[in-house]
Image (cartoon, rainbow, N blue to C red; front, side):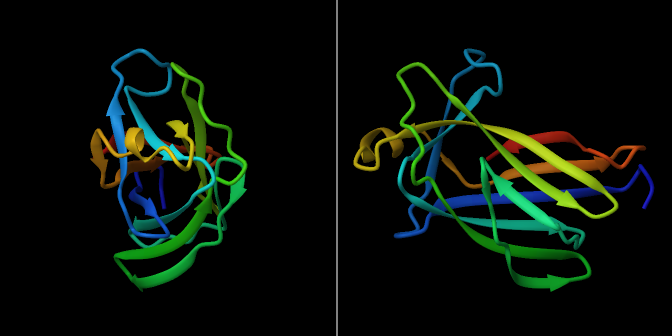
Length: 161
C-alpha cells in the first residue's frame, strides 16, 4: 500500500443501557478543537460501532485513556465492523463554558497511528435534559490516507453527522 492508499473509518456512539442517541451542539469557533461539541454523561457506558473500509485490522484502539477491546461483528474484503463498550466512569463533569478533548486513537501494523481529538462536554449522569438536545450524533466519518513515513495516518476529512 502506497501513500496514495485511502481508507475510511466510521464511528457511531450511543448509550449502552438503552440505545439512546448521543447529541452534539454547534459551538462555532469558541473552542480550539472543533466547532462541534459531543454531549456525553459521566459514569455512563456507551456502545461504539466502528466500520473500516476497506477491511483493516487495528492492533490497538483507545478512547481517552481507556483501551478498547474491539469485537469483530462482520468482515468481507470491502469492510469490517467492530463493536465495543466505553465507560465514562470516573470522568469529571465539565465546568460551565469548558470542553474536554478526548483522543480517539487506532494503531495499525505497518500503516501507522490514526489520532483525532473529540471535543466533548461531560454532564452528570442524572442530567439528561442538557444531553438530549441539539443535533443527533449519528456518526463520525474519518477519511484517511497514509503518510510517507508510515508513522501517523493523515485524516484529510473529518465530519460529524
